Length: 281
Ligand SMILES: C[S@@+](CC[C@H](N)C(=O)[O-])C[C@H]1O[C@@H](n2cnc3c(N)ncnc32)[C@H](O)[C@@H]1O
Image 1: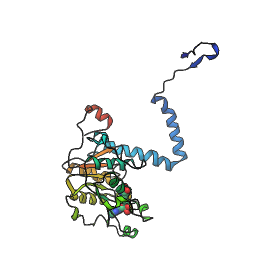
Image 2: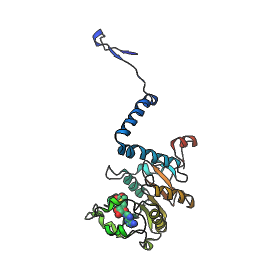
Image 3: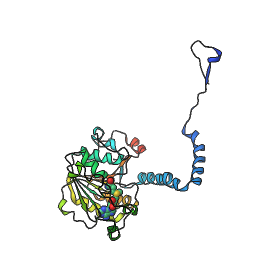
Image 4: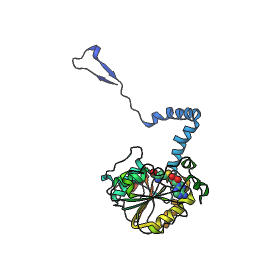
């Protein structure tokens, strides 16, 4: 018990403050009860906010061949400043990588509204962006492999974010199914490939093979949604040990990345501390 006394102590101004320590173990009983109540009351939200998140963390921790690194472990990234929407933190990291690595040519598979294509072009006036999407909603019915997200085909305004902007002069919109698109004109010429089309295993495998063919000798491939789609997770964990360099997952984002050149700082933390943080590079 702690007694605080006001200046010019008087009985009426005496304040009694009880010291209270709260540790995690004090929270456990209440949280367990709250979880049970919220799961019973609202199962869809529990699935979305709790079970999906736990499953994502479990996969990340268990990943056999894709190790976890932090954005601050990428040499120089902490000093890069980019402009963009606060609601798109992953896209900002992508723009930071693009700037850091001095990428000149970017190929994005999966345009959608064109938010990321615009951000990339906006943040670096030297960048030329090629962005590929299906030609029309009907193309979804003729897709070569499994399409992962039917909701993307309800409306059709691909590239709407950059159309008519000054950045659009450096953005080339390409149309086609990525599984049969002719990527040969870009062979060996792309510094950053961003894979964000269909998230099924077969499409990600096909898109990755195309990306490896397009990559320049200093190039980087970034896959979106590595932690969220089972097909991407499975494929990248198979692929990682067959490449000259490992694929890593960038903690705090959904990204996995492969780089033809070394990007990571030498580890500062002890192996034990790295293991505690789930970092292993
Ligand atoms: C997640 S959205 C892309 C978002 C965009 N990369 C961004 O960050 O702003 C996925 C896009 O991939 C496109 N897509 C799906 N399957 C495709 C395929 N086989 N070939 C080309 N584009 C595809 C969809 O039409 C959709 O626009």
